[in-house]
Image (cartoon, rainbow, N blue to C red; front, side, top):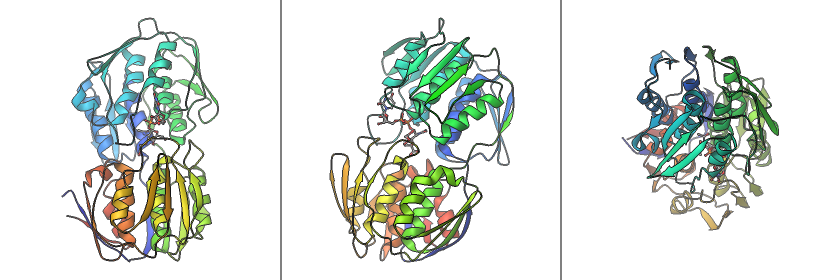
Length: 416
Ligand code: EPZ
C-alpha cells in the first residue's frame, strides 16, 4: 500500500486536532539519552521518523514503551554510544544523537545521517561546534568518531543558524561544567521546545528563540513528563490545502504564533484566517490570488518545509509567483511531477517561476521526499480527475495517515 488514490474537486470542511511536532519530538527523543531516570513523553506522533528514532534508542539499550498516546523512555541502562549506518541512514535526526551521546558518554560513533533528497545535508557546522567544545572529531569509513574526554564550555558562533547543529550543541553542553554560549543559533519553535524539555529535566538553558543561547552545565538530569508542541508544518499544510480546495477548516491545538509567515501569505491569497487562542480557522473560495514573490528563510520567515506545499497552491492561483528557496540547495524535486499534472513551473537554480493555470489534471506522479510528496497530494485534491501519488512512504515520515485527516475534511482520497 504505497500509493495514494485521489479524486480531485472536493471542498474541505470540518476540524482536525494537530499532532505533536515531528521536528520537536526527534531532538527530544535524542535528549532522553542524557537522563538516567524514566521519562514520559505525551502525544507520541506515530510518524516513521519518530519510530526510527525509537529504534536507534533501543539499539543503544534504552527501554521504550508505548502506553496509549504516551511514550515511556528509560535510558538508565544504555550500554552503547555507537549508531550503525543501517539505522542512522534512515533518518536525518540520527545526527542529533551525536550531541546527546557526547553529553552522556563523552564519546560517540555515529554513521553519517540520512534524510530527504533535498540537498547535501552536510554536518560541518555540527562538527565545528563540537571541536570548539574541545571534542576530538574524526571522520572515516562513513562514520564520525568523537572523543569528548576533555570537553569544556566555550562560546560557539554558528556560520549558519542550523536547527540540528543548535540542538545537538545544546544537548552536548547541558552536562558540561561551566557556561557555554551558542551565538547565531536557530530560533525555530522546536529549538525552544527542546530548551523547555531539557530544563524540565533540571538543565539550565536559556535564550532559545533569541540570538544567544546560554547553557550552564549541571551534574545530572532527573526524570519528568513532557508534552512537545504541535506540528506547525502539518497545520500549515492543511491551511494551504483549504486555501486551494476552498472550504472552512478549523485546526486545533497549534500555536498561531508559530505560523505567522504562512498566515501572512495566505491572507494575501484572499483566504480568511481567524485565530481563536490555540486554533486557526481557514475559510476560502478556492480561487487563491497569486503571491508575486515569496522566499523561504529561517524562522520566523516562511518555512522551507512549506515551500513545496505553497508551490502547489501557486500552480492554481490567478497570476504568477516567483518562489526562492533560500535554505536547501535542491528542494524542487516535486516540480517535474507537478508539471505532469499540467502545472506551469520553470526552475533556475534556487528559483521557481510559477504561472497559475486554470486547472490541473489528474496523473500518476511520484513522491521523492517528505514535503514534496505532500505537495503532490495537495495538487491531486484540486486536479480534475484521478491522481495516483506513488512512493507514499515519504509522506509517512512526517504525517500520520494524512489520508485519514484529509478524508475527515471531505477529500476523496484513499491509500491503495
Ligand atoms: C531541520 O533539518 C528539520 N529537520 C528540517 O525538516 C528543516 O527543513 C530544517 O531544519 C530547516 O528548518 C528536523 O528538525 C529533524 P539545518 P536540519 O541544519 O537540522 C545547511 C522536514 O521536512 N547546513 O537548519 O538538517 C543545510 O545543508 C525536514 O521536516 C550546513 O551547511 O536543517 C541546509 O542548507 C526537512 N552544515 C541549511 O544549513 C551543517 O552542519 C539548513 O539546515 C548543517 C546544516
